[in-house]
Length: 259
Image 1 (cartoon, rainbow, N blue to C red):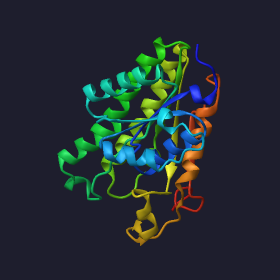
Image 2 (cartoon, one colour):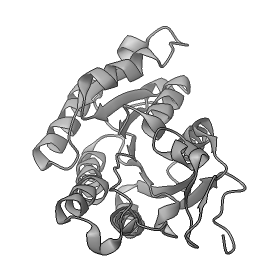
Image 3 (cartoon, one colour):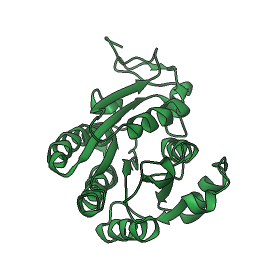
C-alpha cells in the first residue's frame, strides 16, 4: 500500500510544456510529487523538466515526459497506460491543456477552429477524466483527485471568445458531474478558475485587450506562481476534503462588478 509521503504521490499534468501547466508541474515537483509532464511535443516537455530544478536530487526518477494529444482517445489511453506502468498509480490529474481561437465576431469563426477548441478544451478534459476514473477506481489505495482548469471564462466571456468561453462553461458542468460520480469511488473533483496569469497566453493582457464596451485597455496581471501554488494547495488536501471551486485572479482585473 502506498504511503502518504509526497514522493509516493503521482500527478499527471496536461499542457505541461508551457504556461500554467509547466509552472504547476514544477511546483508539484518542488513539493515532492512524482509528475508526468503531458503535451503534444516531446522536446518541449523535456525542456520543461530540465528547467524544473532538482531540490531533492532525484528529478530523473520523479519527472517523466509523455507526449500525447488529449483530443485523441487512443493517445489518452496510451498516456495513462504509460503513467501506470511507470509509477504504478495516479493520485492527481490536472486537466490543464487548452487552446483558444482567433478573436473574431461569432458569425466569422470557422467551424474547424470551433471544433479544434472543443476537441482540446472539452473532449480532451473528458477523455482524461474518464481514463483517470478507470485507474483511480481500481488502484490500491483507491481514489484520487482531479482538478480542472476552468478559467474566469467559465463565468464571464470576453468579446469574440465564443469557442473558448463555451468550452470553459462546459468544464464547470464536467467538474460538477464528475465530482458527483466520483464520490462513491473516493475521487475528489474540483476546479480552479484563473484570471490574468502572466503566461504566453495571458501576457497579452498587459499589452491591451478588447473590453465589453469596445475599447482596448491594459489589464493587471499576476505571477503564474500564484496559480501553481493554488493547485498544489488543492492537491495537498486529504480526499475527505475538496476545494470544489477556487478563483485565483489578478486582484484589480475587470471581472467583479461591471468592468
